[in-house]
Length: 221
Image (cartoon, rainbow, N blue to C red; front, side, top):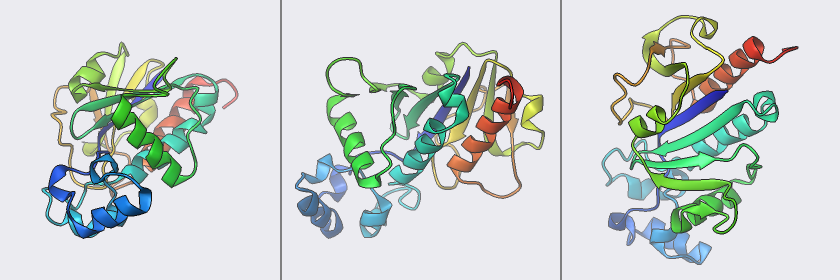
């Protein structure tokens, strides 16, 4: 099983300090929601983000959306060998049921995430496909029972993934556009690997890991 943790993902509701900002209020009126019920989205709230600490990297639900689409449609997921976990900058952990079909429409996906923040699970009754808990990155990673934990980071070793992946592996991939991890990652991983000398989007890193794992452990790949 390949377990992937999308760590320090920039997925959050609009913080109270921005509720009165014109860009946020306009979006809230358009959506028919209160400002605090909206996902922070840099494509719509860019002007408001200038006043937030780390504003240049926050409000990126699109990264989570694309990464989940890549994972969901992969051969590895279809074979039942991939398990995705989301972790946010505010230490919220979200378990993704492998059977979940990720919504392709971005606006509808944001609505689903807003429902998750509001209710803690989607759907709110019955067996949840998404469930939210308060957990640090270390708690998420240490709850896995993998043989090896691999951190994908720019400052890692330039070695082929095939040399570090095992059949039971947890991979930590950054869910943010640039910069470093906010969480303490030192000591969490057995190996830290750099895939490429330039910054890669989270979904590209995820794709490379998934394909490498498929070639190693899925017969016929």
